[in-house]
Length: 109
Length: 237
Image (cartoon, rainbow over all chains, first blue to last red; front, top):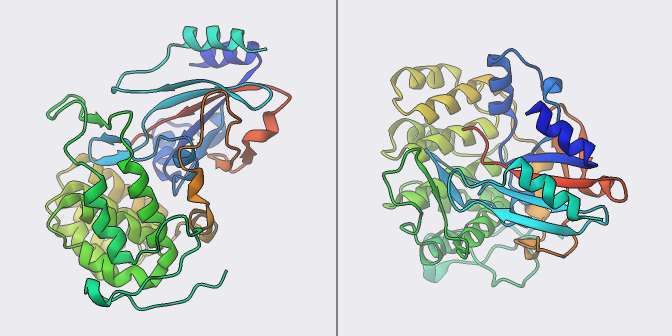
């Protein structure tokens, strides 16, 4: 994971991750594995109320075990602030590979 | 914009509309009407794959828009605040699980004055695990998990569902810390016309969120500097 983030940074990109929950679950998980919030080496953004998740069209689209949560999705936004790539998951494991993301990043100016 | 408090009646004929912050692109609806219309716009059976699946992960069809109705209903209920309590209490006993789930979830956004006993009842006794889970979350979001620590600990001993047990743990972790008034205000004030506005080859909707380590971050701060890989996760439940 650390290598993949390094690859993104080398390609001039910033990874942002949006979680539709408050931070209680993430904090507990970190505590259980002996890490702290600043050990997470990318911004993990909390979106309680799911406003950003709604703007980006992913809120309430996945039922995961007992919860109703976000459809996993990846957007690439270029330096001008324009969305240049969108991939919304249609199944549990459906995600773009790191290679695909890096290839798409290369296409941006 | 001043919020005009109206009492919401349980009978449709006598229902008065409640003023809310959203611009009137949508017809004004009472809390009871918002709850009633969910069933009409959300086909609960339209998940893929069909159950049972391993892991138990189901997705809406890509062209499904029922989620938007659900989102707007929850915003309207949060905006109505205590005026929505009566309708939400009734919805907490609806025969269908999706309505009870939405009611349990929405109560967490009403701020401090929520029906504690009704939520604790739902957290203990509802047949649907998701209702129990969201009732527990809402007790936590309203700041009541601290005063209910003993009850929540007892529930943790008898609850069989793994996710509900986890959420009991989160409620016990947060104690009396409620969902911030700022987060509720942002939800209520947000212009829902922006729902699903992120489109390919269009400007990315800007936003400001706090990260796990407490820093605030705006998407637009990267403009001119770096491309952004924006990943939405379902979040470990």
